[in-house]
Length: 250
Image (cartoon, rainbow, N blue to C red; front, side):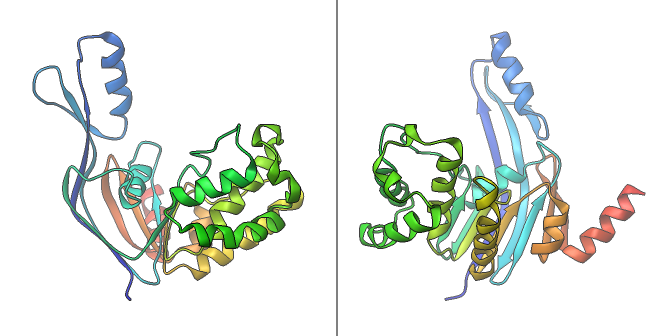
């Protein structure tokens, strides 16, 4: 199977209703940072968060989505991950996506670590047998061991971070979607996590990474898509993007 992501003329609009109140008008203007706001019907306004996105991502690509805050890179990442549906245009994906956006979403603080492993695995639509087969590996890598039988509300921040990171990176990914590079835990765990993250990226067929870290872009990515106000302003190789940055900064 050949893995691919293709976006054709993709737009994404946010609609905000009942603009009569000052608070909602303020919310719209806050949303409009980086996007274009236009008046829709009645008391409805819309923010065009993405406009006319055309992007082909093929097997072997490690593509960085870059741009200032509000440029649309995380929004585009969420469209690719299936969190948002395009308002217009087409998105086609060949391959299974693993999203690492907000990896702590869905955590139940009253449940045990073990129950949370199963819950998070099921949220990723993994079969129960697959989840069960990885519990021992998760316990070992995270270093939590018997603590998995305790409610996660009893965990320190470092223990919870180790659990979330380990579950997020335990299962193979054909297409890996990342909002910044994942790291977690205390100093003793950081290098271990970095090595695991690197292996996961190397093994994935496609990686899409939204990031502000330009050194990371140089180290990991072969292509760059730069966004500004919801539009693509640069699309090309990492080497060409670095030249483009120097030229535009001069």
